[in-house]
Length: 129
Image 1 (cartoon, rainbow, N blue to C red):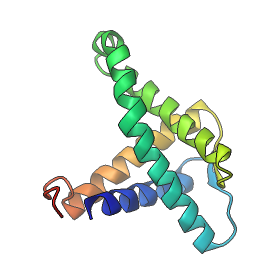
Image 2 (image 1 turned 180 degrees about the vertical axis):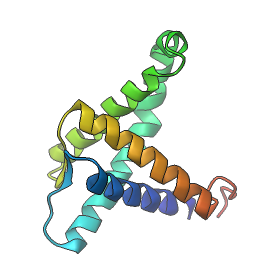
Image 3 (image 1 turned 90 degrees about the vertical axis):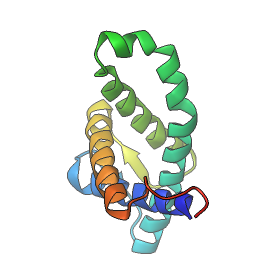
């Protein structure tokens, strides 16, 4: 249940990023197609964050320390771009147009996800749900 809620929260956060950030778009024309695209992109986002992000953190540990964690913003932007690239490869109508769109999109997704996770108390739930 927690996994499903996490994907839904991420999909809502991705939708918010399409409204807030120029350069991030869902190109599907109907709402059911948009929702389906956002759910698949949210799942891709989760996989990228679960697999690629820890590897980058381990490899770039020194840079994270040297920049007091600010390098994480660049990593998040690049991972957001990677998610957009994967979406394009899978034929999904989700576009991220460049580094700055990815940078601001990653921040919007993080803020919206954080607020929704607090509201839904996902952090406090047991993994058995």
